[in-house]
Image: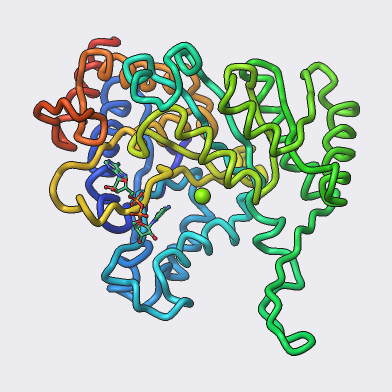
Length: 368
Ligand code: NAI
Ligand code: MG
């Protein structure tokens, strides 16, 4: 059997810098764990625009559809700010998400003990935190019709439409319940069923999926505004949070920031299963291309490294190896390794991107 395939799209800014460290880690798993991937690399974002005049070439799109998983760095940068909307770097990423139909966005909020004092919340509240936000990614307010800016009764009106169908809600709900079974077996679904019809439907359909397909998982419901409060008050009450596109955008950013730096946050976006049973999947750090530090070897590669760990777990059924990598990161931090973004005002000498890569590889070696 051939090796599973991994398409790597480093992109712009710090994307290629953090991806270089992930490439070393991928090679490590090939050499030391007999876990080889067919890795290929291609362009996305500004890098693709520079080469082809489009932020995502059709050939790259086709390769992404074929790949067992796609790992992306970051796209964008000031160089591309004045480009027409249709060819902006971000459009390359949006096209990938849309054409791969990646409806389930997984955003973990996990607190590494060594960084607990970095949180704006008390150590008690965040230490040991490990929650997963599942955000619907392809529908809702960001896509619903009608949308636009119109003229009405002599003034302008801006319109977006929150719209969800039964099938859209059920498929993302299934993804959340599946995930919960592999974790703490609890799902809390968040909407605004008190004021929005789309929220009423959401609650009914999530309840339907629960009763008919996942009665073994514990399900609760919460209004999204109360959920935001609870996330800041006592986040450890949650395991998996299931929510729509708009609320998920806000709640996942809130949850993520409980735990520290942007340089630490991975994500996965999953679609329907392919013929081989694997879901279509795109893994990427939450951060952008960080033009302020790009090209200086200052970027923290951990968000991208942890995105690869998610790929091991959710695309390649290598949960134990994903644990190994996450624990190596945890021990690296516990030993005091810090890139600049993880240092407080007291300062010290930060590690470079590749030195952080070295430190993680050393802990991986020690795990054998
Ligand atoms: P950003 O995430 O690139 O940077 C925000 C701040 O966090 C900066 O000070 C940056 O230096 C720091 N930072 C981010 N990642 C870091 C890391 N790994 N290590 C150390 N420090 C890190 O967001 P910003 O500045 O709003 O956007 C910059 C560009 O990135 C824009 O063109 C934006 O459109 C694009 N962007 C792309 C995303 C993507 O590819 N998914 C997501 C967000 C923004
Ligand atoms: Mg956001």
